[in-house]
Each structure stands twice: as C-alpha cells, then as structure tokens.
Image (cartoon, rainbow, N blue to C red; front, side, top):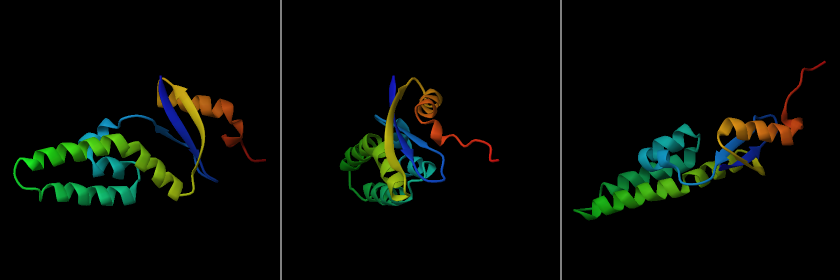
Length: 119
C-alpha cells in the first residue's frame, strides 16, 4: 500500500503526491522537479547540482551522492510546497496500491470534486 496526500484548489483538478522516497528525484534531480512543476525548488536544485561540480577531488563523489539522497528524500515534500504556493490545500490522505486507485478513492470520499454536467 502506498500513501498519497490529496491537494485541492478552487477550479483545479485535485493533485495527488505520493509519500516516501522519490527515486526519480534521486536520479534526475532538478529535471524531476521541473516535470512536477516545482519551479523554485528546481532552480535551487540546479544550483546545488552545479555547486557539486565545484567540489574538488574525491569529495565530489560524496557530495554528489549526498545531493542525490537529498533530492530523493525531500522531492515529494518540495512538490507539496510548490502546490501550496499555487493555492492548493492538503485536505486528505489516501492509501492505495497505485495513483489511479487513490484518485478513485478520493472521488468516492469527496463527490463534490467531480464536475457534473451544467444545466
């Protein structure tokens, strides 16, 4: 079972953010953040990644692994922070095997989020 936080904003589709380590963020760093529309964290992450290249000698490998670990540990939190900056509120926590099932459970719990046909 995976845990997802559900973020809701006026006139926007609900967004689900998974809890846990973000392997994509650990491997791709700022590109993963860009793909998740976390612009400010992506810019800071790009600067962090560039700074790692300035570290001399074998310490560069250690700094690179530490940066990758930090991206993985905090990637989802940075996406949540970016959603909050865009006006989303964290309103629910959903447990499910995958994102589609989590979204279906959210829609069952909050039928008011489903837009019906207008009369």
